Image (cartoon, rainbow, N blue to C red):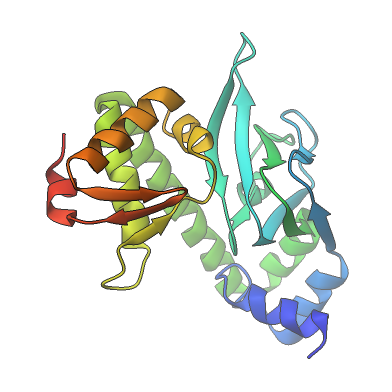
Amino acid sequence: MGPHRVHQQILRSHHLFEPLSEEQLDELLESSQLLNLEKGDTLFIQGEKAQSFYFIISGCVKIYRLTPDGQEKIFEVIGDRQTFAEAMMLMDTPNYVASAQAVGPSQLFRFSNAAYMRLLQANQRLTFALIGKLCIRLHQRLNEIETLSLKNATHRVVRYFLAQLAQLPDGETRIELPVTKQLVAGHLSIQPETFSRIIRRLSDEGIIDLDGRQITVLDRVRLEQFE
């Protein structure tokens, strides 16, 4: 099977592309770019004209903004088989509202907003898929706002681990952090030292076992109740 067909199969696993016919997916791929990035490579900067959205084949990308005093605020860390920046197609602003940078070697598709919008206008199923994707993102952001505003650092970390567990097959208890602990801490709006201290406490109490980026949840009930 050639690379083009392999990429078609990968894209069909995502609901923004699943409704497309084979001809429509071919049309979209023909206008796309396959990018191979190294750690630190930038995809776009806040304020640049938003002409594209992205699908990660492999690797990891952080979405962030710089505060007025130059501090980096990480909004999201995006991994394999996920899209980002697609909301810009439907926003009034013509420019990216944040920046995107690879946090390790990554392979991505860059898709033209204009090309996708043409397909969107001709495919009702695709329209509903995009609306569904944006609703999920909105729900996630609202949950994060509640957590960051009302809960303490320990609760944020526990909720993060539980959210990672929820994505695993039933019975699986081993979580692999998608990025460094420092990036996870930034995403949770806590200091890296605080994140490490909370992990050590969870480990000392026998709730988790830590091995590099791999975290095994030994007692899920106690984790859910941990404060």
